[in-house]
Image (cartoon, rainbow, N blue to C red; front, top):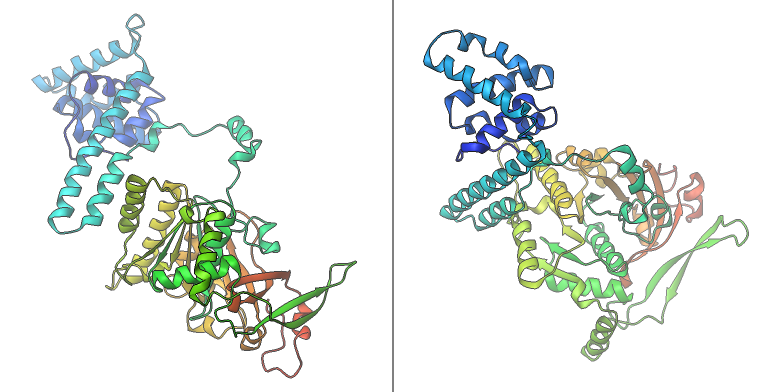
Length: 481
């Protein structure tokens, strides 16, 4: 970040920062990235810094003794300003190279960082006040949040290769990834991960919300805490579905649940057949007499304080609004989530002007930035376009509206099920894009929406898959790849 348009550098800080910019190999890049020349209150210092920045931009190093050459046209005029430039340049040289005084780059950088933080807070107050004036409370809270957390990335040096090796050898520093109960995905660590954006794409009314609920269930099983933000379903319905998914319950006592079963060869592990079965002995979520029993199970498994379900009106939520909500959870309830299930991003507030697609792409970038900044896994879904709705295999190119969301997300998984597959509780997940691990492959899953189970079993896709389904079906044929 570069601080501009606020109170300037004065006194010893102005002198020290100028010396750092002109002569320090380590300090000059930080000053160039963090401080605009306009912040120097003296015209003499502004001229020195402006020429210093011009030199640095051209040669990627501080000018040092060449600063006199850069200022020669101004110093040779013989006027009072030129004479002052000569005096200040000489004093900066003596200050930086005075061995007895011991000019310390680290001390000046620390002092400069404090100044940048102070100015960030002032800017935050101004921005928050402006937002309040127009009734944008979310924007005001977000501005103050950014200001309070302000740190310039320029003040941190990054890591060396040796430090990287040490991090790699420590299991605690690996990607903190959610297991999904899908062997083929879990083996490659393709579940949602902290500091990443996970995107699920499916046709309309084809299980996107159930996927997010499934991810939330798996996260709770992994002892993560999280937030389920719904822009489509009610809080009550999400809570009902989540309880149904956690305890594998059917919706009614009289409902019969047809569950597909993958039959594998005991010796080779190869798929032999896909059979259907009727599960009769399965508990139901229906009936007030059972509420107490489920409440006790929730308490016994310590689930109650691990998740918050929050409903926002469709089209009303911004990234600032999410930040404000997370700040409220933290400050008032001490609740800091490991994940957010956002159902779903395309239903947030997006500009409806001619740049709708650009605004949508920017929204996804901001959501990923939120995940990185807060250190959480952000899991959301998007609808496939009209071509994907009828496709044999939904691919990345079938995403609705802005395609750049594919490039922004760290992992993109698509969902496909032909009518024939849906009737038999079968579907396919296709890893359309993976920033870290492998992609462009498909896995078959068995499902039981009737008992809230998005995934019951899985098997890697293979060309003969369609021959395992009953013959004579209009959807059969092809590999699905």
